[in-house]
Structures are given as C-alpha cells and as structure tokens.
Length: 187
Image (cartoon, rainbow, N blue to C red; front, side):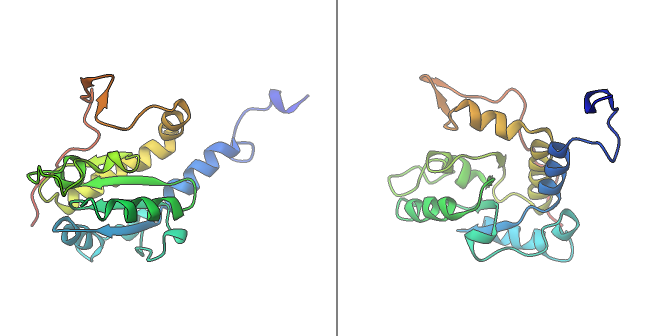
C-alpha cells in the first residue's frame, strides 16, 4: 500500500493547500497611500472595520516585510519609478490591490503628469473601484484576493505571462465579471 492509495484527510492533506491557507490568512500589506483614497484605507484598518480579523493587523513600513501593496490614489509620473522600486523590494509571492479610480485608470486626471492606470507600472491582482472607495469596498477587494490566493488563480495568470494592461492586442479589455464591486457607502 503506497501513499497513492491513502485518502486525503487532515493528516495526509496536500501541502499545497496548507501553504495556500497560510498565505491567505497572513497577508501583510504595505501602504502606498498617495491621495484621498489613503484616508479610506486608514479607516479600514481602524476599529470600525478592523482588518485584524483577516490577519492584517499592522501595515508594514518596509517593503521587505510585506507581500501585499495597496496603491491608494493617483500615481504621478515622478512617483511611478518609486512605486516600481518598492514593488521590486517586496518578497515573493506578492500581490497588488489598486484602490480607487485614480489608481486604476487615472480618474479625472487625464493629463501628462498622471499615470493612466497603475497596471502600466506593476501587475495588479484586484481593482477596488470608487472615488474614493469605501472601507467596505477595500475589504471586499481583500476577500476577493484571499479567494484568488486560495484557488491559485494568481499563479496561473503569472505563469502564463498574460499581460496586465487594459489593452490586449489593440482591442479594449473588459472583464467578464467584475473583480470587485462597491458594496455600500461609508457611514
């Protein structure tokens, strides 16, 4: 009788499932708050919304201690290289949430000084829409990221080398199902 004949239980479960569970339960965010969306991100970490229940008690100040970057607000052309440097210093595996319409698409700042979407600089895993998005929207984006970590969808996308830009082969990219949706308005 070999290991192939054993049924999976809590003792013989797959190590991959255990690693995914541990990663999902201990995501450590790095703050990259650039504008008004950062206030909503701070509110999500406060007592009313309490991100500690997701294993995210402390926002890390060093990118070497973080594996999730929440880009909150508009990214200027001068800030883009700094954003990329902080992303490169983060440990693998690493994930990115683009918080707010300014970080996702440039928002109402359609000019030469603002990057028209942070996905032109770093790969984005989850978009949290809104201007500014409420703390509930950020929490929904975090739960969506947790589900992607649990199912392994992120690794499949990165291994396939799929582009993260909004344009694919000259045609505009539109998601089949929205990655994150606005749940409500702030209190």
